[in-house]
Length: 155
Length: 155
DNA sequence: TATTGTTATACTCTATAACTATA
DNA sequence: TATAGTTATAGAGTATAACAATA
Image (tube, each protein chain N blue to C red):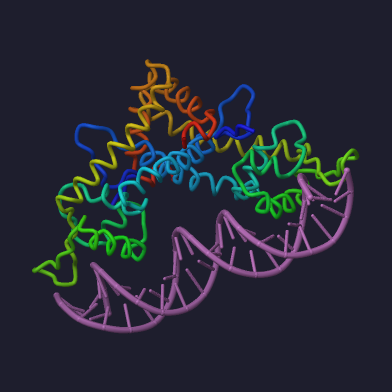
């Protein structure tokens, strides 16, 4: 039985709920990432942290956690693993020795780029199935919504 | 600190990963639904079941569970609650007394319609912030992706 | 023996609270 | 006293395994 993302929820006339489309779709995309991340020796949270780190060092792990929507206590093990793998560096801030400056290493940058390239290659094959004229507007709209402050969506 | 859905993950030149946009966006949309569902006396899974039920009775709870991406053991309590609230009916199939025929009651249909209207009203306010020309292509593309069999995304 | 619905158990993930060290 | 990081504990959510009824 080929089960679609939307399950049985048809909706005569109208559209399905945005959430009812996005949540299962997001889960499926995450599941699709897993083998790719495995091949690069990354966990989902590890990859998320690498993405969240950007290219400048981040002051305080708490800020990093908040930026990627995680609890500060939850990324500690993730940071430990990434550090042990040599993908990130944690250095105490000389000015305030409580805070840790977290930054990507060269290896971290390379792994992140390789993993992201592989992931987006897969995603591009998916996007290729859309009508060509819809692709750019779709991505533009999705980016616009994702860029909104969370409060403006939750209310 | 106004935290956007995308967190810090900028990506010079390219686009963010689809999953990195969809997953947090989906979570935010779900969070936005919660108070609406509360007002209608529904849980998230309860609402999902109502959506999954469609308008014809569903044979076997297992099929229903699979259709909405849940475990068959997990929706039992949900069905119990919905039944007690008078929103669904469970009747043994005369032909095979193992299976339960699950169907919406009139009240169930009404509650589902009311909740969905309220939810989509909120969502429409969000969509209104997109460039008008992008709205239809966005929804069309999102529906197309959500209608894909899960296997075609996960691979 | 196989399947539907159910219950009971175990496991994973996440959030809360308590601790250390710096300030 | 307040904050960053860490650790330990508890809770929610989910999946796995065992059970009763029917086929």
